[in-house]
Length: 292
Length: 269
Image 1 (cartoon, chains in turn yellow, red):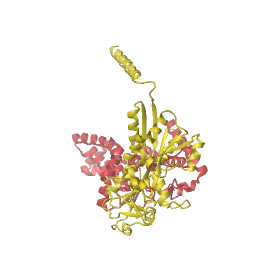
Image 2 (cartoon, chains in turn red, yellow):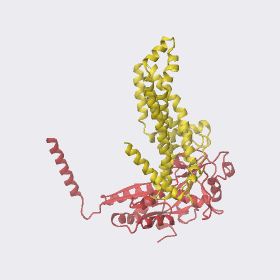
Image 3 (cartoon, helix red, strand yellow):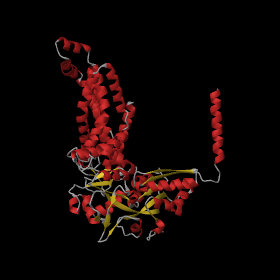
Image 4 (cartoon, rainbow over the protein chains, first blue to last red):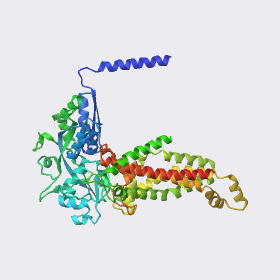
């Protein structure tokens, strides 16, 4: 009996405690954000800042790949889908069939960096050379002035927006009618971090990822589309000189309302954009080609 | 219990069969390319099936001799104090989460095998096989041990009576008498290995290539489902294709468990 009384007392105090702290004017709620692994760290940083300002809004952020986010937006299991590629017309069509009207928000810009092991003497490649490497037409580093080693190509899983982007821009050289595929010897890894680990450990490996994942442990290659080679840095992405530059997007179902709108506004505000910059991306305000 | 199995089967069957309304059965069963996001997509499951079979075969080759010998040692040779220690060690082995083994595979076993065997990459079938063998060991050891202990004492005594040494009795009398139980252990081990997902997803590299050797990256049925299910939209072709892969997996494990069950029944008689 005594124990039960104590329990009830604790419960009552607990409930009273809850009631007291919530100001009725303060926004409360829960936001589920799902999608791109490229954006997941930056989105996490934004949400931490956001939750400092609005402590009663809870935000859950998960990765898995842009495809995962878009699928869960269509399946109505998230409020915001993050994506490192634009939604395909086919996906928008499927979404509308499910009663979802995707609305796109460009939140930042990113360069897809190509990384190799630090001991690899190769410093720069053209898009055509990358195409040869990733389709399996070129198989030895010797051909590009490197060591006599078989090239090990690393890719993300098919659910990744970066995979899709890289496939369209490099494997298929940006041509719509091109049917080239990744070489079937390409390793499909489940996260950007797994690609970093394999490149650090393997002298013959080459992989690609969002420039937010580039660190001192690997070497990012200079990439050229014509004659000029550019490094994947903020400046080159901002001026659209780096050939593998792209937008990063948020998708919502129709116009967002309540806390979801609050979060998107926060992400686009200077404070939110600063977090993207700290995570290694290019804030949208600084990009020359603005969407809005 | 049976109701659950039947309803899972029907659920799988319903979604898997939806695929064959839009994609030909022949291309699915015999196709050699798995390109789910291409246009048009290709869902040939042969590379995935072979990937699973290669890894499983490799794991069983490593795990069965090791497991059966350990079981023989624990059941017949080890003194009783050692028996207890070994049995609890086997139980601890069974308690290691598969994601931890996968992590060990990525950071240690993979790079080790690459340097040792001079491979292109450590993310290959062999790494997966070794880790899976490790995971199947507890199953194989404990069921084999039960089978060995279940052999009537009279057999052993008769063998000793005929002048057999301890080794001869163990090798020629006890092991053959326990053979059905040991086959059941092996089958359950295979079932454990072929259905394992996390380890293979993490360490085998997942290239959807037609495998020719265990020393190259390959992609298994389970890793395909786990790696791709998150991005599929309910009701799409890709979604149904993954269910069809799940159905194949279900049928394989069902057959294996059925054989194991038959063997166990025979062993009990």
